[in-house]
Length: 205
Image 1 (cartoon, rainbow, N blue to C red):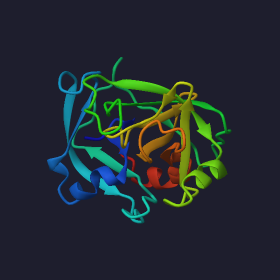
Image 2 (cartoon, one colour; image 1 turned 45 degrees about the vertical axis):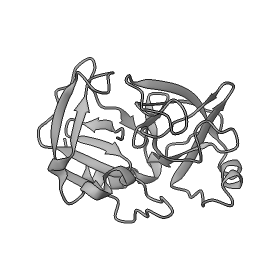
Image 3 (tube, rainbow, N blue to C red; image 1 turned 60 degrees about the vertical axis):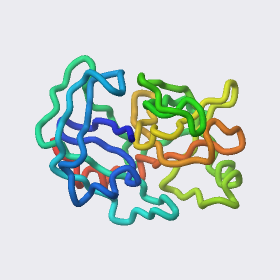
């Protein structure tokens, strides 16, 4: 299970590690929108295309971004609409508050949430995050990190591909991390501003 975020009437963004095995068979995936319940409600849309970033690496999780194109336009309304995504020049100061949401586990290796949950986190300084993950993986320019320390809050398994939104702008996509809400390791997100031109190449409306 993965999350995604609507960016136009026919396009959603998600993480490449969520979709890589479906890229050759888009109809085997569906996007459900407009519900706060994981197993009920909303509207289901078939997909006509799954675009995985051409430089995605399953080892380093670099370029962990993918675009889903629905077969039909999504009907927008009060509970279904597109989010503005970060421009290529978007600046995201350290300490900025952001909201991450999804149906993922509420504890490490726990079960998925039946309802959509959200958590407030703050953007972590890039070097601080790189030091935290020094022995595990590289934190590249296409990634950003965020966490909450008091109380600890984070994305978890099942939240991958979901949105990180700051000031009504999509700034990140849930990508990876070590544990969940572990104070040593911030959550790692795909930095949307770095991929703005890539998104604009493939977006369909």
